[in-house]
Image 1 (cartoon, rainbow, N blue to C red):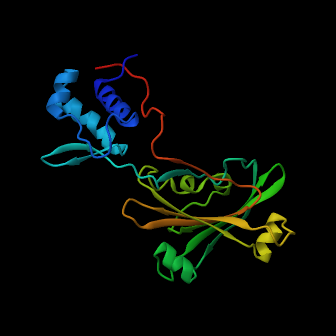
Image 2: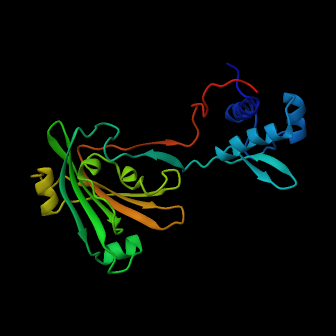
Image 3: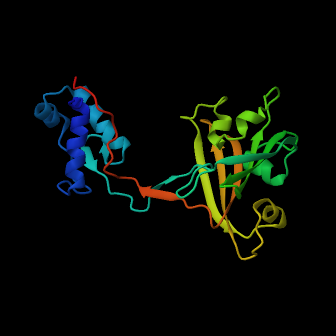
Length: 246
């Protein structure tokens, strides 16, 4: 099936950028020239250019036109799912606790709440092949009447926990990753006897569309269990599904 015209425009320009025919800073053909070359309307051309801009290939200068963007060589897309990583997947969970607490100073600052705002705390253990591999804690500001359904949260990822009250498309996610030696409680949960085994710690914060925190999570992974994967922004993958030209 042939591509819609606006996607064909985007892919043709993208190919020129990827093969070096167009270099960072080079001007893209004018909208008028693209309209003539593809026998397309200005709206169709602008739609194709919008695809390129959204994918980071070009930028616009009002009154001057569109130009090839300098690639950000330090930007990577990190794939993170506390239930599944690059080498292993969680096949069993154990719900340790679901409770409503008053926040400590760290939670007050992280969730931007008052000291009398209650917080739901959820503690879980993740297993792979019968071995405990991660200790997971989630904190969610409590709303009166909010149902706590243990069966639903047992295998839920963090975004899924807040999906009923927030659109996943509008949620901003933030990760901080570091290593840490386990404390005695975590050692017990993860069956760690070797004091030299560090943990990979992933702190995750979720924000609503207004930028207000709606949850914080900390997952302690055994250092011999988890690997994360990231790739650069640009790839050869197509950003569309097959369609018909219109």
